[in-house]
Amino acid sequence: MGTFFYVVLAFLVGVLVGWFLWGRLRGELDSLRGDVDRTRSERDRLRADSDRLTGELDACGKTRADLERRLRDAQATPAAGAATKAAPSALMSTPATAKSAPVKPAPAKPAAAKAAPAKAAPAKSAARPAASKSATAKPAASKSATATAAAKSSAAPKAAPAKKAAPAGATKPDNLRRLIGIGPVNEKLLKAQGITSFAQIAGWTAADIKRIEDVMNFDGRIARERWIEQAKLLAAGNEKEFAKQFPTAGTASNT
Image 1 (cartoon, one colour):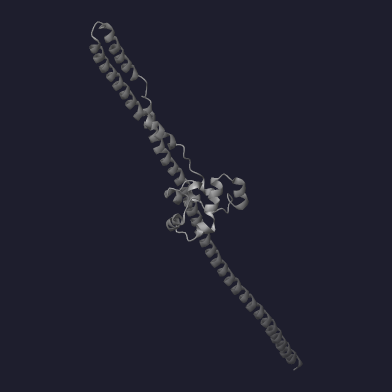
Image 2 (cartoon, rainbow, N blue to C red; image 1 turned 30 degrees about the vertical axis):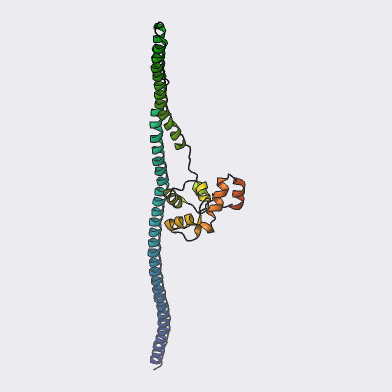
């Protein structure tokens, strides 16, 4: 009887101990499952963030490539414009040189040669009457006058193109990008409107400002950035006053 009681007691104690251990193990197992679920959710969130950042990085790379391409095009366009402007000046100066080259005093020699026989003819006919001398002298004088006028008329038109060809290379465009607010794109638009020097911008009227702002899609920007005041200082060569009033000109924040 005593043995049976001890066996039952041991069984009950074993059940209680097993239940207690199982409860603790089950709690730890649930905690581990919760940790696994949280880890999985964190992993999914990190994956989503990684995909989003990768997409943004690709978009930034495309935007950078597009901006670099536009910058190269903008830098190449002014160079092409300068080449096209230099070509007409070369074409204008070449014919002027070709025309001015043949200008020689050679045509004056035939006039002198013609005048010499005219003077020699009356010398041989010294015995003729005075009336005949005067008659022969007048045609000679008319021939010499005609030859001189022909020489002047032939020389005058040839020398004229040389004066026209001189201003072709004299005008040199200014670096408009020195003005605050003018970058490669705005410089290209201004040159398309024929604006290439500081003096032109310094002489703008209200009508000119309105016309330029309509073309460049501005709204009061020329007055805000004081383009005309900057151009007046640069056109006058007052670099010291320009640097004092506009210290940011020529820096990275210029445009």
